[in-house]
Length: 126
Picture 1: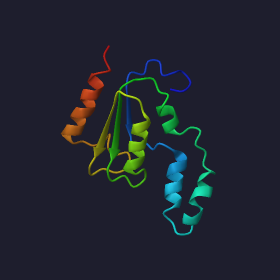
Picture 2: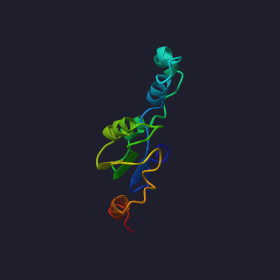
Picture 3: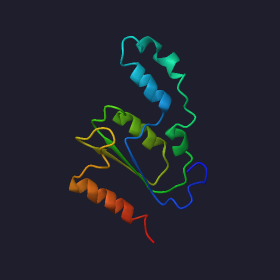
Picture 4: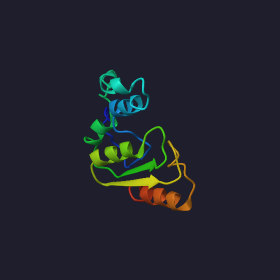
């Protein structure tokens, strides 16, 4: 989307996406007693110039559906909500219970499948 401005993109669906590389690195470094005291200095070794949060603020206003597994052990739900908050409307956030990392989009429960199809039926028209 950055290079071509997103021409032709009519909708966007994201699953288990984090807002910032640096924020996620800081959180993971904080989990271990050995790296916990250094989580802030070490996190600055992780570049954040391509962080999704930066692009979310600038994206063209197309419908956005964000899905995130409530039990995601890799990218916690709070990261998805942070990215969602940074994004412009129109947007919708769905926290999917009982799913982990990148499992929300593939969740086969009828209510989630119906929600995704309804979302796509709106902006994706010939």
